[in-house]
Image 1 (tube, chains in turn yellow, orange):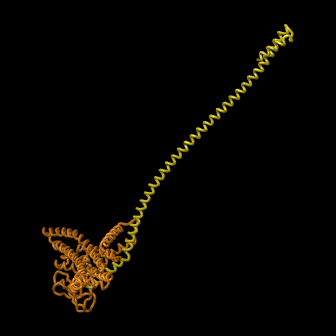
Image 2 (cartoon, chains in turn orange, brown):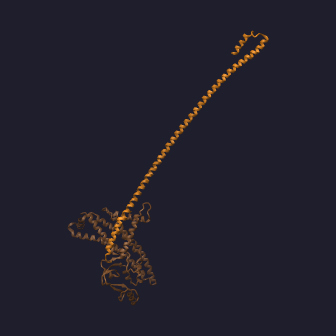
Image 3 (cartoon, helix red, strand yellow):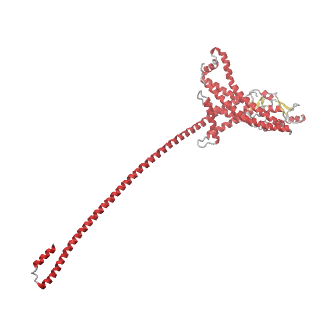
Amino acid sequence: MNLNATLLGQMIAFGLFVWFCWKFVWPPLLAAMEERAEKIEQGLKDSEESAKKIIKAQEEADSMVKSAKSEAKKVLDNAKQQADKIVDDAKNKANEEKDRIVNSAQAEIDKEVVNAKKSLEKDFAVNVMAAVKKIVAKEVLSTDHDDTIKESLNDFRK
Amino acid sequence: MASESSGRTFQEYLAHHLQNLVYGPLPEGHERKFYAKGDSSTEKDTYCQDKGMDYDGSKYCKETLTEDGWYLANNKTDVEAMGFWALNIDTLFFSILLGSIFVFLFARAARNFSLESPTKLQCFIEMMIDFINGVVKGTFKAAKNTLIAPMALTIFFWVLLMNVMDLVPVDLIPYPAELLGVPYLKVVPTTDLNLTAALALSVFVLYLIFSIKSKGFIGFIKSISLHPFGPWMLPANLFIEIIDLIAKPLSLALRLYGNLYAGEMIFLLIAGMVSINLAELTLTGIGLNLAGIMLSLIWAIFHILIVVLQAFIFMMLTVVYMNMAHEKFEQH
C-alpha cells in the first residue's frame, strides 16, 4: 500500500501509452471516420442530385413524346392529303382519258357511219341502176329517162 | 477456499490478498521469514531444513541474508525494509499487459480501417472514438490541443480494463499462482495506490505544463496568488489556491483507488464467507455458502456500474482539469 518506485514505472508506462495513442491510434482513426462521414454526405448529395436529374429527364422524355406525337399527326395528315390528291388526280386523269377515248370512238363511229352511208348509197344506186336498166331495157331506151333518174337520184341524195 | 487449504486464518487470507508482489533491494543481515508448511512442529522443522533454513519455533522458517540484493518480498517486514526503491511486479505486469491489449486493439483497428466493410471490432472502436470525441469536444473548449482526446481515450480504456479485473473471481488467478510459487498476487492494478497516484501525478504534471504554457509563468503565479480575494489578501489566496491545486491529483488518485480497493475488499469478505464454511457440511454452512454465492453475484453486477463509472469519472475530470489549465487568467 505504501508508495514505491512502481509510481515512477507507472508514470512512464502511462506516458508511453498516451504517446502511442496520440501518434498512432487517434489521428488515423479520426481521419478515417471523418473521411467516411464526408463520403456519406457526398453520397447523399449525389443521390439527391440524381433524383432531380431523373425527374428532369422524365419531363424531357414526356415533352419529347408529346412533340413526336404531334409531329406524327402532322405527317399522317399530310400523307392523307397527299393520298387524297393523288386519288383525285387519278380520277381526273381517268375521266379525261375516258372522255378522250369515248370521243375518239364517237368520231370513229361517225366516220364509219358516213362511210357506210356512202357505200350503202353507192350500192343502192348501183342496184337501183341495175334494176332500172333491166326495167328500162325492156321498155325504153336508157336515154329516155336520164333526166328522171338524175332527178330521183338527187332526191335520194337529199 | 484459499484461506482454509493454505492453513491461513481469515485475517491472514485478507492480508495476503491485499499485499502486492514486491520486488526490491534488501540489505545484508536482514532476516527473511517464510511460512512453514506442516501440521506439527517437527514436520515444520523438516520442511524448513529441506529449504535450507532455520525453523523459528512457531509458524515460520527464517533466513538471514549474507549480502545485499534484490528479492521478492515475502511479508510486510520485507516490504518495509525495501523502502521506496521497490517495484510492485503484479501491478506493473497487469497494468502494462492490459494497456498493451488496449493499444494493440486500437492500433490494429486503425491499421485495418475499412471504409466500406467495417468489422464488428472496428464498429465498436468507432463508437468509442465517437463517444470520447463527443465528451472531449463538449468539455474541452478552451483551446486546440490534439493531446487531450487521445489521452482521454487512453485513460478511459486503460482504467476500465484494469477495473474490469476486479470482476475476475478473487482467487482465480492468485491461487494457481501461489501453487506455482508466486507468494503474492494482486490482479487489479487500480487497487494499488501506486498506479492511481501515477496516473493522477501525470495528469497533474500536464496540468502544470499547460497552465504555464497558456498563461505564461507570471500569469500562472498570478492565477494562484491574486485570486480569489485580490492582491491585498495574497497569503490567503496562495493558501487556498495551493490547496485547490494539490486537491486535484489527490482526489483523482484517492477516488479511483478507494472505490476499487473497497470493491475488492467486499469481494474478499464475501469469498471468505464462502470458503470458511466450505468444510462444514452443516445446514448453516451450506446456507452461508449459498448466501455468499448470491451476494458475490449481486455485488459483481453492482460493481460493473462502479467499474465503468470510475473509469469515466477519471477521464472526465482529467478533461475538465485540462480545460481549466488552458483557460486564460482573468483578473476579477
